[in-house]
Amino acid sequence: MARVYPLFSSSEGNCTYIGSSKCGILIDAGVSCKKIVTALSDNGIEPSAVKGIFVTHEHIDHIKGIKTLSSHFNIPVYAQGLNAQYLCDNGHIAKNTDCNVIENEIEVGDFSVKAFTTPHDTRQSCGYKILTPDGKSVCVCTDLGEVTDTVHENLMRSDLVLLEANYDYNMLRNGPYPFLLKKRIMSSNGHLDNRDSAGELLRLVESGTARLIIGHLSRHNNLPSLAENTITSLMPDLKRNIDYILMTAPVETGGEVMIV
Image (cartoon, rainbow, N blue to C red; front, side, top):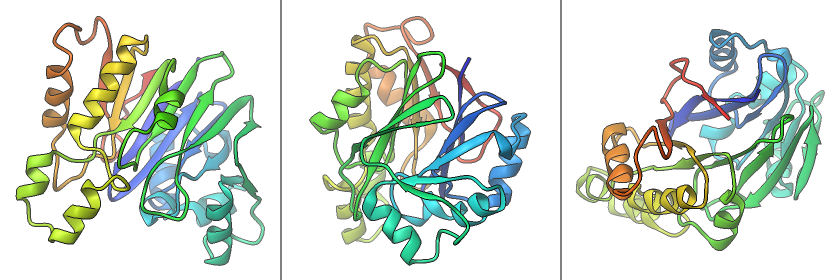
């Protein structure tokens, strides 16, 4: 039975483990190798269980620990073409590490992993749809400025979705960030606010997805309670913990896990 462990999730670093104590994959490695290994250990998972690291894009909060982790534990890395080239050209991949290009779908450790395009201000950005060995589907989708048709089509009919809810519009608008940074975050290539995330999650629940995790919350422009209240308030006819399960991914692992 596969589980989803959102080990780290924020603008300071992102890393999600999907699998069991024996076999699984990581989506991103955006904190230090030491932190990732400790977080895995806290959940009863050895680094040898990780059969691949899948990179969503090249921003540092998604790749910070990838070189040491992949090299030290001999874990292959998977990324879209432009990201794979960037990782290799800029010293984020050791010479002894396999860096594999994924453009659509690939089989790794009994997991089928499919990349789909997300709109973000980077050379190439994607989310991942994972089919687990027991036939469950999981989507991890953060760092996107809007929910495009491509994103929605890939999230649909998933058993579990981890979706970004990066900022609260009023907190960002009235906060201390410079105007140009606020404009970037709110753009169609920036991040999702709570309302946009809530709208998509409602559509997903109505189509049958019952397990939801919101992630990549900004420490400065959001609060877990605010994000969750926004989502539940836009689902007045659906009951939390009955029609759907909602969890907020922790900034740093607290041992929280969701069974697919």
